[in-house]
Image: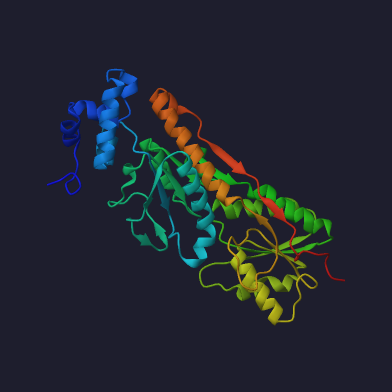
Length: 353
């Protein structure tokens, strides 16, 4: 049995380096400098043997010993890679990956919990959350009971997206959709629009509620707002048929995929955008698309969002390992909102007539 074919253990490292197993453990856990009991030459010899044997420390054992694993977990409440979801998740994961590389951490994507009714459960018998030092949570909707339960465990995590759960105790990095949507509403009002439509997703997610809040704030006192909700089984043409009797001159659409589909339907029906109807989208595609329309829209900084979440989580982990644990646990959670960019596009104009 050779070092290249056998599972390398700390005992084998110790034997090869001619040191005790406790010395190897101290070096692996990064405690050699802290204790100042290990000569530099001994530490270098142990590290050289580790490199030569490609030893990989058992993350569970390291966690039990109170050491960090250098692993950042990523948990997605919805599957991350279907075509429609990829517009949401891809830039976030790009930011997470880049930031994790910058701090020398590896990513561990948790996929073992089953998807039920489109969502994963954070607490499930197959969940391996504790393998990572901390976790970044992604998802349009997150179970508030699970978030509160996770807070009670004191496990370090950061949610992407603003969260109302647990009485405002959830740490998050999110997007300021209220201000961005308010700005788009102000643009429409400034052009003279007084009849407004909103085609939105269900208000079960904070991001949807924030968009609606910003829109209502901007339109109050300037006209009427008709709304249609995109529920399961509802098509964009169904939603448009529900709003159309109110004769809106500008239509705000939350989902960019819905906006693209409706634009195609309107074009086929002889309704010109923006000459007959202006369209404003409260999001955007993150990948080039065929026949893509340059909608007037908001652009959320999703890549930066992912990177900021990693920064927030690593700061939390550092605080836990450099300060009193109780003091770190009692510290106010990070709750940061990043601004959107407003893209003028070509689909918002003055109302007809």
